[in-house]
Amino acid sequence: MSFPDSSRSSRNAVPESWQRGTRFLGTRYAILGGAMAWLSEHNLVSAISRAGGFGVLASGSMPPELLRQEIQATRRRTTNPFGVNLITMNPQLPELVRVVIDEQVSHCVLAGGLPDQPTIDALKQAGIKVILFAPSLALGKRLIKRGADALIIEGHEAGGHVGPVTTSVLVQEILPHLTEVPVFAAGGIANGTMVAGLVAMGAAGCQLGTRFVVAHECIAHTNFKNAFLRAQSRDAQVTAQFDPVLPVIPVRALVNKGTQNFNSLQLQLIQEVKAGTKDRKTAQLELEHFWVGALKRAAIDGDIEQGSVMAGQSVGLVNSTQSVTDIMTELTSMLS
Ligand SMILES: Cc1cc2nc3c(=O)[nH]c(=O)nc-3n(C[C@H](O)[C@H](O)[C@H](O)COP(=O)(O)O)c2cc1C
Image 1 (cartoon, rainbow, N blue to C red):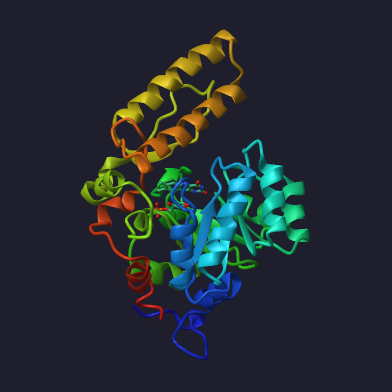
Image 2: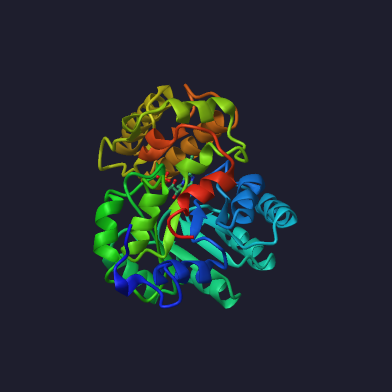
């Protein structure tokens, strides 16, 4: 692959955008291991950071004290930088933010909706770099004004909760026009050619989730990993929203009985919201709780039929289990 001259550093052949990413993260490689609830715990996160990437702890629905223990356990395994991912709709967000500040974590990724200003300010005042998800150019600009130190643009191909626009369109929409902060690309990325291509377009680096699920260091149940190895890209589908009375964030997962269970729950909750026996917010929270439990059931307990096997479309490109170091070497082979 050749890079446009403007993206090359005068010092060597590594594009300036990638160097900007590594400087921001404090890592050898500008590869983030995207936070995955239940799976991005100290083992996987420290392995990614030890391999030169940037691991991100998934706080998911962890109580604050467990997050503290996870941060400390990660630190015992690596002295390299790593981040923490917090879900903005978590009712314990203030307590989790406190832990991140107390533990002097260097970078915090806020996911799951627009974070409020006091949360961003509290993190920044503590000297923590704040990374936010930008679903469009306009929102990306607003997030920078609100204090984002870096952005992630994550396309529809990704595993887990997804937005409506693909990575290929988001990078064209956003990368040329948001140069104030480093912008990392995510969703559907599985190999070094793709990473190098996105960096050549101006991405500061890439975030991957699906590919790291099958890493030796990932604690996912063997059934979960095997489901990834067997799956084709088309098996990783997004859930539908049945009625605007109950807006749902689509989730991409391998289709199974768990998907049907989600659909049944959604239909039941729509009836309850329409009947006025449940308000919309409570119903939405119930759906989110469903995913937390269903993902654990599949990823940790190994019930890949009834549980949720969240996976991105790149699952079709994941064909063998590997060490994190081998994955990292492949991903960065065109940039090292
Ligand atoms: C099993 C699974 C769980 C995930 N959990 C979270 C999460 O808790 N928080 C979050 O911000 N993103 C979550 N994601 C998204 C990843 O962090 C990452 O952005 C995404 O996987 C990148 O796309 P890819 O799957 O195509 O590599 C999850 C993804 C997967 C596959």
